[in-house]
Length: 176
Length: 129
Image (cartoon, rainbow over all chains, first blue to last red):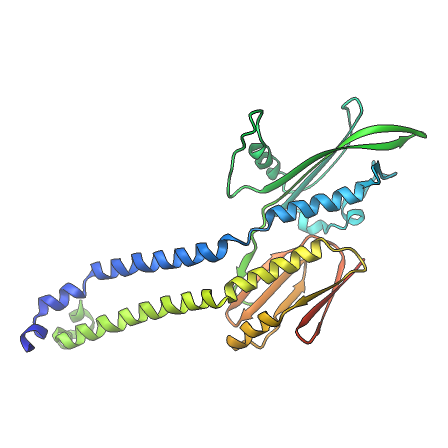
C-alpha cells in the first residue's frame, strides 16, 4: 500500500494539467448553462417598444383625430418622454412620419439612436412574409394608422406611421 | 510542479495529493456557490424586479400610484444578509440590489416625477407630472 502512495508517477498523473482542463470544461459548461437558463426569459425589449408606441400614439391621436398642434409638438415634454434617455448613446429609438392623403410627408419627428432604424428595416418582413431574425438587434414595432385632422376647418385624412425600437438589456452593477 | 512550490517536501505524495484535493475543493466550492446563488434567485429576482418596476413606470400616467409587493425580495435580501436599500430610483435608473455584492440596473424613459416610499413590504410609487 505504501508503495502505491510513494509512487511519484501516479501522483503526477492525477495532478496533471489535463485534470484541470477537464475542470475548466465542466466549470464553463455549468456556468454557461446556468447563465443561459436564468438570463433567457427576461427580455422586455418588445414590451418597451410597445410602450413607447403607445405613449406616442396617445400623444398624437385623440379619438381618431390628430391633435390640433400635431405640427408643433414638443415630443419629449408633451409625450412624457425623458429627453436625456433618448440622447445618444441611447437604448431607444422612435420615428413618426405623418403623411397627407396624397402620401406627401407633412411632418416628421425622431429621437434616440437612429442606427436602430436600419436594424428595424432589416427585420421587417419581405413580400413573402419572411423576416430576418437577429438576436442582438433592437426589437421594433411599426404601425400605420389612418387618422383625420382639421385643416382650415376642413376635415382631411392623414396617415401616421410610428416606428419604435428598444435594445435595452439592462446591466449588472458592482455597487449600488 | 509540486517541487516548484514546495521544494523537496512536495516530492512527498501526501503534499501533491493535498494540493490536488485543496484545488479541487476550491474549484467545486466556487462552482457550488455560483449555482446556489443563481438558484436562490437573487440574480434573477434583481433583474425581474428592476425590469418590472421600469415597465410599470414607463406605462404609467400622472396621478397613478403603483404598489409593488417586495416581500420575496426582502426574503432573499435577508438570506443574503443585505440590509441596504433594495430599490433605488434615480436619474431614470432603477437599481435593485438583494445582496451585498452588487445589483441590477435598468433604465426607464418616462419623464414623470416619481416619489417612492415603503408601507411594510410594499413599495409605493407615486407618479406625478
